[in-house]
Amino acid sequence: MLKVENKLILSWEDIKEVIEKLSTQILNLDRKPFYVYGVPRGGLIPATWLSHKTGIKYYQINAAQISKLADLSHILIIDDICDTGETIKKLQENYPKCRTATLYCKESSPIKPDYYGKLIGEEWLQFPWEEVEEVGQRDKTYE
Image (cartoon, rainbow, N blue to C red; front, side, top):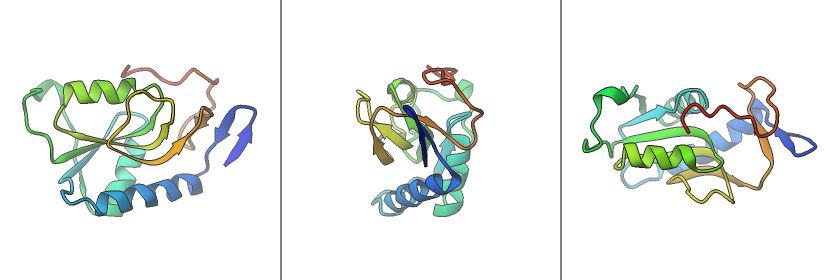
């Protein structure tokens, strides 16, 4: 991990360490999910990696075909970070029976995922699969 001003540039080794922690949490659950799903963009790589690490199959959710009333409690939705909590909030509203997990979760986030690999402060994170971004300019496709 490289710190540049108020930004932490994460390496693949940093991600591997957090994947290890999160996969241990998932494997120790009393009620393990049948499937993992990655939020498009930030959650795809972590969900795929967690699928390989835990042996839990990856499942692609088609939001247009799923009712909010469907029992999706067997699916764990993965994202890279819980920053403002808005993505997790929307996931909880749209899929209230799913559980959520992120690699990183900011201490200041008012809404937290069910599971996370590491709690962090206010630093801006740059993931190894992202191009260089300006601080505060993260993709907001799903917010």
